Amino acid sequence: MGKTGKKAVLKQLRKALKEKRAQELQEGKEVEPEVAEVKEDEVVPNVLVLHPSSRAWLQNLPEVLSGQLVLQDRSSCLSALAAGLTPGTTVVDSCAAPGSKTSHAIDLLEGSGRMFAFEKDPKRASSLLERLRLLTGFQEVALHTRTKKSKANRASRASAALARGRCLPVGSKPGVEVELRTMDFLKVDPRAAPWNEVEVLLIDPSCSGSGLPEHHLTAAATGADTENDGRLRRLAAFQKRILSHALQFPKARTVVYSTCSLHRVENEDVVEAALPSSRFQVVQALPWWHNAPKEEHGHGSTLPSWASHCLRSQPDVHRCRGFFLCRLDRTAPEPEEPAQNAAPRKRRVGTWN
Ligand SMILES: C[S@@+](CC[C@H](N)C(=O)[O-])C[C@H]1O[C@@H](n2cnc3c(N)ncnc32)[C@H](O)[C@@H]1O
Image (cartoon, rainbow, N blue to C red; front, side, top):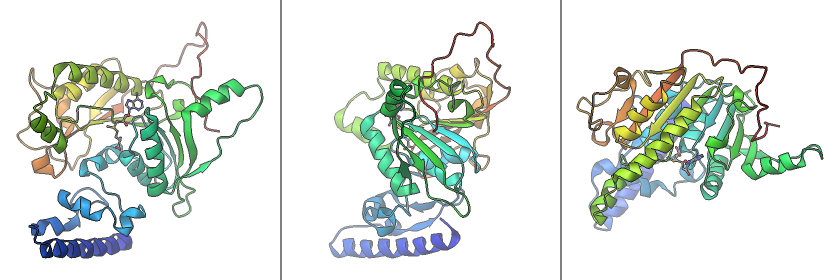
């Protein structure tokens, strides 16, 4: 959103919220004045802060329906920012649906670069595609085939590739190239083209969601043990695999790992398990971010020293859901694969064109 665009949207939002509040009051409902408030975020660029209860009021606003305004949790804006994206970067979003972080990352690429987005669940992948069309002006090109010889290869590529194309141009920049794939990110071969050119990876895997307000409401309403150890262990094992996989992309300079979990076992413990076998270190994610002074990181032993670089949001302090984010930067180049005796590598997925 440009400066003028932001001003106009702010004005429009204030008007819409004021009118909605007046209507609700007229209907005899109790609505606190802050529900109708909107202001610019003090630290997160291009983000407007609204009361969570006003979300439902805004769903049908023309700016929301047209994709000019994106309604999402404040925490969802942090991963792409923490990755330090610049125009021209090649990015992977490993667990992309519904696309909050993918679309924000595309925004930050300002019209040039590449985005490869993976989503395992076909239904969620379709809604991701719809969302990208709306929010980034993504337009597909045909998933064409080339020679007869590679028919089988093409068939397997096409089954995984959901869409390929370009987002809207920005100024003189042509628009970010995007490829969406309905597939398990763990099946991507990091050393095969074009993945061996990926520079930044966003890893936002499925998690317990213990940082979400609805998580606690569900637990309280059903009396369910949502912190069940077995489930957490299974999630943590998957999260370790996916982060370790991301750290194997030979040209990757930055990997951002995030969850909306408050559990150390899904956060610091996952990073701690993946770090030693990698050529990465944990760095300060967002220098302007301040964690709340009294944090509950989980039980057990003291946290490693790098853990102070990680970002943890607390709903009451940071006006967003509970969230964990860790940025890992490369410290040393990946060793070249030995040319001799190396088994021929199977290309499991196809190339850009
Ligand atoms: C926490 S959500 C991601 C939210 C998303 N990053 C956003 O900001 O909108 C996790 C997503 O990862 C998908 N997923 C889980 N395992 C995956 C895998 N191995 N490969 C690709 N996607 C996966 C899930 O289906 C789910 O849609």
